[in-house]
Image 1 (cartoon, rainbow over the protein chains, first blue to last red):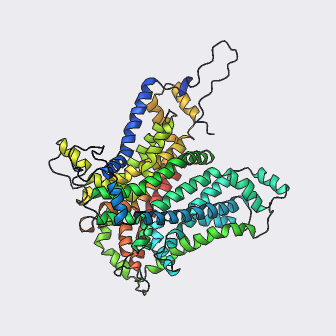
Image 2: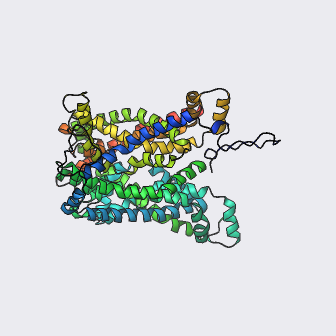
Image 3: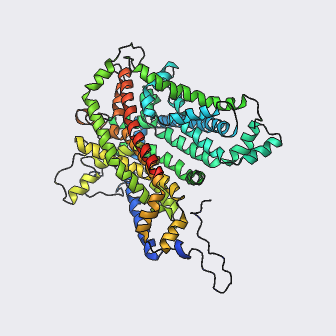
Length: 303
Length: 292
């Protein structure tokens, strides 16, 4: 664990003449009550800025049709709360199909990245072979290139595979990301070499070392990759917008854009649509945030 | 140490390598090739020489897009290098409930840019929250056209990008703060430095490298902006298409019978050079700083 997250331990006193101090009250780490209050005030202020807009949208989506949503005195709590707009949205456009399409794409992308990136990351960091440096260099080189630069010729490639306007075509290019390979490379590299050597002495081959030694110790990084891959695929807009032409193959983001064009005069419906796209991702993130923040710290300590 | 058959590493590497070659390296080369053609979204196209590049020179929309990109970058850079660092310092200290705040501050990052832009569209609408409140308070007499005026629309999109980016860079800084020596802070505190002086003389130098990395990330992503401008402008790029970004132009040329993938590829090459320049400048700054 990093030095910083541990509370500063009192130095062991040579003689036990002074009573032991309470934990947390020692020196630098202590917070005065005034500072504590100031910190919470600031935290709540930032909280309002960051999640306020989402709450406002949620509120709009629940406000009854008779309610004036354009009032000059904004009301956060709906006077006549209703789920009608959610029903209306799902009845007029196939939101559930869009959600399913997004899910299919996200699952393919997560699976591809977790498997592909850990295999390659393990080989480049733990196995020796001719051309290893070159392979590593190739992965590093692609990071310089913003994805949008190659998006048109990626589309041409996908079209030539006959996958334009398919969900598989949406998922395919993102199924193994160069950055994820490098993250896995970094994670595997920080394991001590001695463990590998011991395993080799015991007769373990490369696959066994990958499965039983490598993988279990990089779970933090794998979860970060999985979470990011899921969020990235679920949220992506430009690429599915280019690949998909058929409205019934739309992913949620593309479908929402379509929704906003159709119902630009009814903010309640658009609000309901955005909440349908937003709530699942928040649930996914809130459930997994423990692993996410742990993985981030793990990376920080090692990097 | 070679305790495996010679092909084992290759078996592990080949899937990722294939993806790299097929979806990164080949498309980079193919972008250059395509830029000399008039390829269509539905297939076909022939060699047209330098015609696309000649058109680029006279493309008024591209000029606006490049200007917008520069403004985007110049405005985003100071806000997104400084504010997330302050946030990171705020959430660094372990207080009861801090995990909740960290997660909540990260929410805008997790949400899709489309969702976020649709929410802000509603807030910035002529009859939306901001105009409603401002009118109520008597600050303005009529609604401000956040979504229809060329410059206000650009400004709105920039604010949205900053708002959405705060949590993302906060986390990167948070990881970096973990590496700033606690001992240094304590030493400075013992020497009588207050929180502000410690921030300026200990924290900032400690995260300097991260700051430069973040500046690079901000510049590149400001130049690549798409969803915010696309949604806020209803896909139209603002009045007279003056609020397009380079990526929006690329997307426009990728569609339909009128589309021209050759021209979109030429625009992609412009995008490449535009993003590489700030990256090189900042990387050089970093090197010089490290030597000093």
